[in-house]
Length: 244
Length: 390
Ligand SMILES: Cc1cc2nc3c(=O)[nH]c(=O)nc-3n(C[C@H](O)[C@H](O)[C@H](O)COP(=O)(O)OP(=O)(O)OC[C@H]3O[C@@H](n4cnc5c(N)ncnc54)[C@H](O)[C@@H]3O)c2cc1C
Ligand code: FES
Image 1 (tube, each protein chain N blue to C red):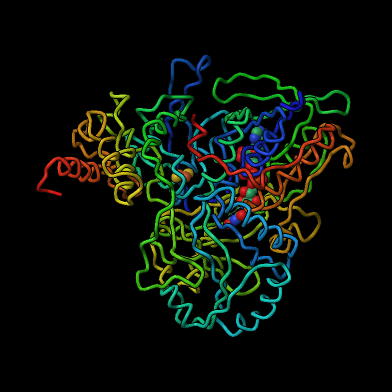
Image 2: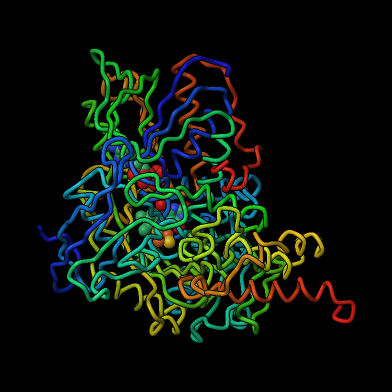
């Protein structure tokens, strides 16, 4: 492969990528590609390189390239990760297997239908900004009432893909959705009783088996698994007169 | 629908997003095709700064005026898509201090509100700033969500009847004599090729605009001019921090969620699909960024990447770094420029000026089609982005 303007020594690596195009590559198959990986090259960079030089039909999701938008999640060697911050050489394997996220329906190649994530997540109605809590010693400038910042959850779908319950139960709200309900509770968005009622079921907090795969996989330290446990406690407390 | 005309927009970046929204609101039938995921070109991976215009107030006032106007329109039509954090232009050296009056005068001429702060006041707002800070100027910059903001335009356009087709690449233009009559596309979902007929085709492919227009033997003077951005762990600042001086490398730090993004640099890349990632630029981001906030020097890197500006320019200025090329946008009717009917190109500009770029282009499209419809995008509040999946 010609010099691609990228830094550092190059190591040849093979990517084994799941391909699927309904009606033409159907059933799915794996295609292999070679890339010359440098120390900074991410799996997403490698996919970009393959699309630009070898196969313009390769379909994958991406946008921000810095773990901020949440579009580029996929499975790399079986782990659910953001491809834009997963380095090729950190995989320490000569062959890297790249596959789409689980749980959500497959659209083509590495692209899944995020409508499934939206359906489970959206009822919490979480706005995507929150009050900024950092720089405590700082004052806000005149004319600025308070700083706001974007929510930590980037809605990438990794937790939903990693969750053993969501994998088989389409009506389970799932980790990101339950974490969003917890944030709404914390922020005081909406009636407390309504929020607790929305999650007090087998599709909500009681569906979780406590596998904690979500907290393990979350790239943004949202720790959805822990938040589900907090939410459970709040549901139980609301039923105990002495705990109010 | 107030007309049966069909417009095909090529390119699903911020410009394409705002354009399909505008055209759909005007009652036109519109289809957008994007070769990859929506906003997978430049729009999704830019610095994330809703510009106040301060950066361009001295050397590129037309662009600065566009920025401040659009800044306030976007806040109104897309509430919740911005961190409300304002920005500072910070003077660290005596040379920076000497630039202050020029800067303030530029801002005044462009209608950009400013407020002068002493070093002590600035450090109280931003404790991680360089302790050598001499003074700072507050401006209405803000952090934007580069993915979710355009997605709100797509969501609203879709609700209004627009047909949005990601993973659909234009591989040829349909032509009759010297008139473009549609596009020939390949779906990267089904692998199939097909034609889409159109009364007008709009090329909104940003840094790819020249590649596209060449398919119709038309020309667009676009220079793909990339820059490097580096995201580090930690929210080192709450406000957008800019260096109070002429625009140069690594002189802005934009906080985003729990990251801080340092940018940027500028060079010329002939192929927008192969930008590379010059290591010396990555190092320069750390070096120059730490002049503003010393703590970032040893902050752990979350990501480093390149993105291509679609700058307009020809000749010598364009082949050098591109710093002096204007950030304004331009809409080309290829009938006037190249004798090619049915093709319009919109390129240049900023993420911040996406709505204005769309308005100008939709005016040209309506004019060419003889459709009488006013622009309403200044007032229509956008749907939440999740509505895209409804
Ligand atoms: C380093 C850097 C930092 C920046 N920072 C800021 C900032 O902080 N604030 C700001 O306001 N602006 C910023 N900008 C500018 C801003 O990012 C761009 O002006 C803007 O995103 C361009 O959007 P666009 O929609 O015109 O182009 P793009 O987003 O590039 O969209 C064009 C689309 O066309 C698609 N396409 C290409 N060829 C085809 C084809 N054959 N068929 C179908 N689709 C095709 C591409 O895939 C792409 O998605 C920055 C730019 C750079 C490079
Ligand atoms: S591309 Fe945005 S999170 Fe990876």
